[in-house]
Length: 373
Length: 222
Image 1: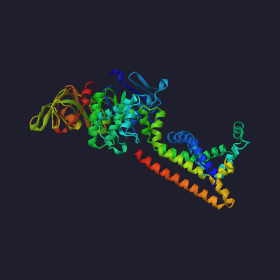
Image 2: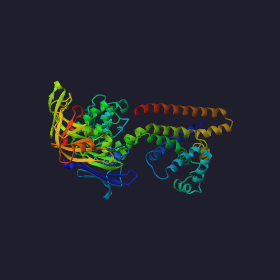
Image 3: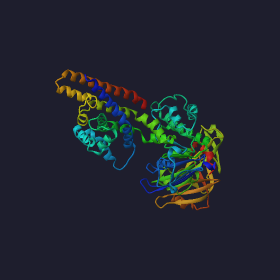
């Protein structure tokens, strides 16, 4: 639904330097990734109307929220924004239901409590609805914060480090929860994080922020397959993202076969069933290149493709080779020596060797939206 | 026992709280949530009555309220009586002397609300007034309550400012604390003793009430 697209331009010199332009369509998850102090939260606050940069334009669908050029600035309470704060910022004097009811002012009084209870059920919080935040666990508080953000029927959902305050196990559940919401809500969803795991699991698009400046912005998969993303290599290591479907199970071999737009891969994974959509991350340094198809190896995965780009940096000895395999772009990190020995040039046919155990399989619903890239 | 003096004292206490609380809420909240030029100066001015000897404060207030000052003349022109040595003048002086007792606890109360909680209230669609009444006041409540009770108790005990500005007019400006001093000077130790005990009991009761109320309020905040 194009009318729900959020488009944002922010520019100022100080006190917090900003130079950011982004758009996010309904159903997409834009992850804003960057080190702490890079201005991620300020971007969210500017969208919500809690911060007013010197030059800003925030348009949600057909509604202008901020337009400093014409001096227009809608206050936060007039914007249909759902905001999940980093520390959740629940109202400590109100119960779980009371917190959600507070955001239901646009509904008739009699509807508010049933609606709040419904929303808390949607985020899988059913018992203890009359408890105050002090008596809740981190995960429960996060769910209340999420229900409260949804209560406004927002035109955009903003999440500021939503998993920072919960432990790993709860984190997985909440990630699934947000992924479920993304599919049902059909609004733009913007997620601020400094953990790349969140990006891989949830995002369809990525904006990398450094000192308030956009370093990279675009669909996640295409950004991940670019060989020249030095910031990404430094932050998390390069690696291509592939969306695939579980095609066959080989329980006796402890493997499953995944089909993607360019071939099939065998991975060691037991907990997925046939038909499940998964996202694969193949670290660039785990990919071996061969000029001829190898024989007599313990390896399951040999993908053939054409070299589409080579990125060599003078500062490091490693070279990033981008290989087109069917419809996907694979990255391999090799030494300068290997480039010379194999005589790798753009347009050359190569074989990429990948160990089954090197492939990181992530179950995510973000894959179906990624097709719209 | 000077029942008239007790009545004046109680009225003065209640009047000071009623007069000062709205202003204190406005100023305390302003100091808690806003940054503005001259904020330090305002905070110093708010604290001033706390460190100034009551006689100094009383002297300046008397000069300000007197028949030769613009305020004194204006009051006399409108009301038809002098502001100095009247209950109204005493009430105004008491309000000024109590500014730190009302503003500071309220400021601390509003400061205790995390900025994110106020922002979250705005993102919930609450207007500034709804945010103030439904989120901020309930959360700053212990501070507001402390301010009201401290002001009331402090007004009952105020002596210097009352004597300077109000004098010692029975039924008008003679409060219980002034009446005690008055009785002592007249060697009426019995009356002074009864009234001193009355103030002591009132002060104890007020403080016990504050403590128990704040205990009941604090866990709710959790």
